Image 1 (cartoon, rainbow, N blue to C red):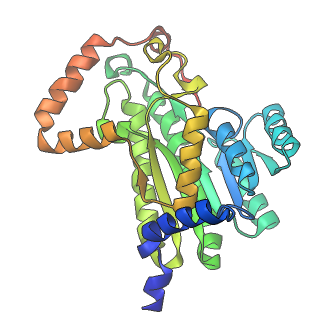
Image 2 (image 1 turned 90 degrees about the horizontal axis):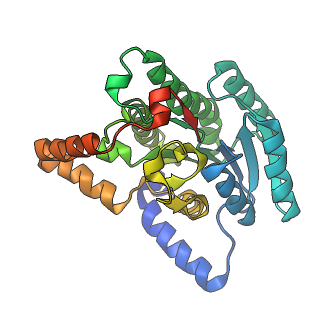
Length: 297
């Protein structure tokens, strides 16, 4: 029984009570004094989350490819009185990821929280992808294999200390199955499933995972798609929701439309296919997709 009580079984009601208690008493965030690793930390959701986490008193471990941008974000956090370390990593390079794991474990013993945010998106119809199998390989490399390799490297130390939480920044496309995003959504769906199974296998070690299925966020990743101009939430607003996912450790974070369409796909699959087929025809591929452009978060 004690093993069950130490597990995440009651995590959601405990988190709700703790949030109310903090609001009343002014108690610090559960992130205070913890280490939080954020990949893709130099722009968009990752950068905004780094600032938000630092303000909660965490030691932010910034990971990205661009050294100058890492230095910029680290300086900004330190200028506000926060604590940040920065690490250069290429999430598509297995050796680079393994090297990051070794350094993190050597410096920190265990990382308490991981935000798998680094990602790449391609919006391109299958009819334009017949001779572009590398689109799928690129998506899997950065959106699935990289974060899984990183998480697996850090997982044993989390389990040994009896605490850890992973937030996977995935997509509402996992629920909607939107046309033109086959390569992107397939890679994010793979990470989504990995996260759920991780949470089940590490349940009694108090290591949990949140799959955060975000919709459109105004970051450089959506730039090549003119149809998305002015749409979506800001990176800062999304970052606050990431912080809540870190603090409360829910299994998923879903939006209303994604939840609706997931049910629609089950209840009326052919009708949901018709709706998406019509939208597919009415929203042509972007000029960037026709040029073969790949965008990054």
